[in-house]
Image (cartoon, rainbow, N blue to C red; front, side):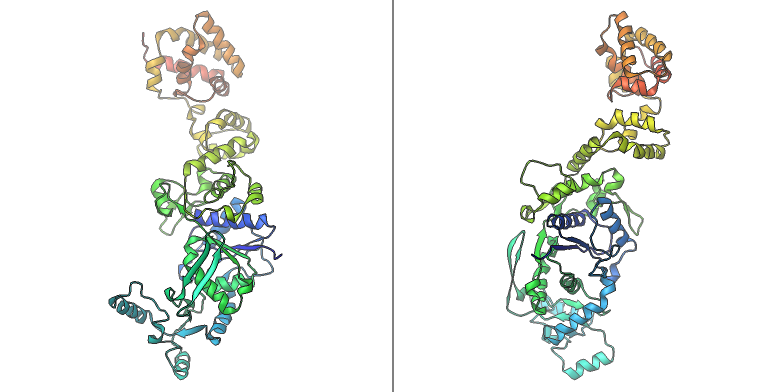
Length: 509
């Protein structure tokens, strides 16, 4: 059997959208499933739209997610170079081969002449004017001009492009592994440019030539490329490469959270959700959120994205990337769009956070604390993790959601104060504060035993005072185990907080 070889071929014209990440993931999983190769190829033929730093962003994003290519511009490989701008001379050779075979032609039309043609077609009632089999003989190209005229224009260095010569009346048929048989009549297709006037190839030519030379067996890409697939199939036929033409699979769109339309970076900005793997700052210095900077683990993003358009056929939702590779199949990819549910992404992250050993989280918690001007040593960081791990979705929330662990509260939950703060708690709280002051390094068990002993003297059940005690220590009505909090604060700090609350809060008789 032929070895499976797939490629992820992004253009460095901006940040890698989460839809592109999913495409890379599905290619990676398919390759690993079949013990094949996952190739990263940078398609930078559109030089006018290149964005500085975009290629580096793509590579860093894939590395963060663990989608490491077997061949790439960085890794190298036997089929390089893996950046299309480094392969420019290769494409010209194949384009001229098509010209020599009568499958393509040279066109000298200016942009103004093409626009004039389209205006005339529109005025004549043509709904979709295009440079096609009907119009090509009315334009300035090697099909409508004599050879002498063509030679003269080339000699005078008149700019030209090379266009594919689409057949006028021919069915182009191929099988998509997700969508089934696709049939398109060539009369609906235009004569796409293969080589631009600057000598660079278009995507259409470059990706066909590269896929052939790199022995790509499966092209797995977004459905936005489905309308171009008939042209690509025809190019394979024109080159005589049908027997080695890769199988195609066009992935469904990732839809907005409401399911209405394709998810865009504007949707991310508008709704305050990440749609890029890493934070991105554009040329206008506008910042777009990244999954990494928002606190997501790479494994949670991978798990989340894997189920955006594919299902395993079971109720199981939690998978490692190796488990996904074992069971992944193109047959289980849906045809319709997949709704981007950020709450589901959070659910995955919460799961992976709870699954981690506390010791794995210490360094990151200390780093986040330092960025918030909170001092934590390793032991204290472990205590914070133990208190907060089951109550948060992201690591940074361990610090951000519990400011009372690091600073005395200055405000108190008014609902709890109104309901639970009364004259009968004053004496037991005063006595408890005194007891805490005498026991600085108090354990949770000691804190609870001491409280129960004092409340017993006043014949008061512990449940009656717990919310009032919590609000005096944290200002909040809820939170992690209160005795653990007291132990974290230490006896003297907890005592001071209770005294402060007793002095500040109004007493209800």
